[in-house]
Image (cartoon, rainbow over all chains, first blue to last red):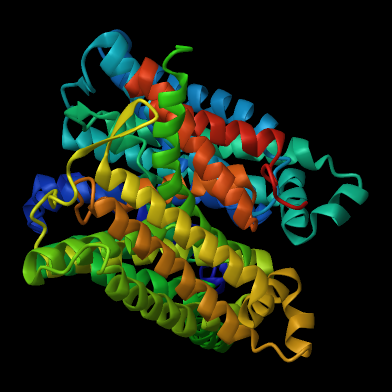
Length: 333
Length: 291
């Protein structure tokens, strides 16, 4: 083993990722003692992870097929509701799986009817779906049950954080393998030119419905984990369009083309929003809107679109180091 | 039900007239400019808040305030298209990408306009003015005069707008731009200018609708989104790009609203969305839309 083996790209990237994961996974252990993190900060970190999971799962489908889905809130909300309803009866692990499954099934159903809609129609339909589910739940609660929303007892911050972290890792692994699979390549070709993809023998409807449902599964799981920190579950707040738009904007902000784009977007966006809401509480939504417009207008590749420049420079530095290491080795022998 | 039907239909007509006006505005923005303007309701809110403010502050008649809200919103809409959407159009790799991005940008404008309005108008909750607030009997049904006047003005504005689109020279350019922007450009139509005018006109119609709504019900800085959603439902129902379609769709939604309200008022919104989703699935081009 020499230094070249360790600095080669094959080991460097996974190594760095594992390091980051270890740092993140142990955050609750040292965060409060050494970084002065309050439990609210830990919650915020959990929220960053939640938006990462939502953004990554959104990009899984919409990023590669080019179908703009605004249905995130629907599947996220189904996860929240499933959890809120079953919290008292079942263990958490079972509930998360059940929530994910519920979202999967609903997405499968929705996908089967809607994915023949093209372009903006699909976006409007998924948007309408969120509203419809929200209104139906609200009607059921107010008129049939005679009360609005569900009150639940939240669990600890650590639990929430660890579960979200696990979910992000699972979601990232899923998108990593899907993008490399036949399914992922089919999705890309649908995004490029759907007709051509169909002529090449790809069952476009099957591919779209499958990936739409898979991406919804993770949204449902994210909802389930989020529900463990909630005190009160309200249909109007959960099936709200901002829950659909925010993860999409974060993903685009970070960059949809890259695996970690949505994660970076969610991190920067959430922290920025948190900071702005403290510094300029009255103006921050306006600043938020302006940033959003600027990003969509001038950064179509997102923040990661800016990275290739940086990476080239880093790559040069690594190459120099490697060359130096080899030189040393040959000098030794 | 049968005895009440005429009065339910009339009530639906009153509601629907305003819905039609809002949807026509959205329709010209999407049908010609290809901007799926989810911030349409915010323009409506600006019109409503402006009317209330000038009525309370300067005693200007709400119908007279149309002369203020119209041009003001036209200018705002025109500038937004000229600065943001023209630039997006240049950068967008495909028309579909433009539509998706413009939807997201419009979402950004919801934040900007709504919160700017909260800062400007003070966010004092629902505000209501007392204008022509006395009953009037039409065909055996009691209406509030302000609602009937609002409907009459909405119909007049709608008809004038339709005549403008179908008869005037600028209207012809707008229709040409909607059909085939590239060819229209070759025929000497200044496409970017026409599209900006369309967006401005859409904002103007939304502003008018807002002013009219403020004459008969309470308005606030947060009212916009619900109307934007209604407008989307009406536009899809009537057909994307069809102005008569929006008019008919508006009346239809108004009637559905009044009939569903008669049975169970809590079901109005679910009924909207159900209708909306069914239309999208069965006939995505809408009742009068072209394929």
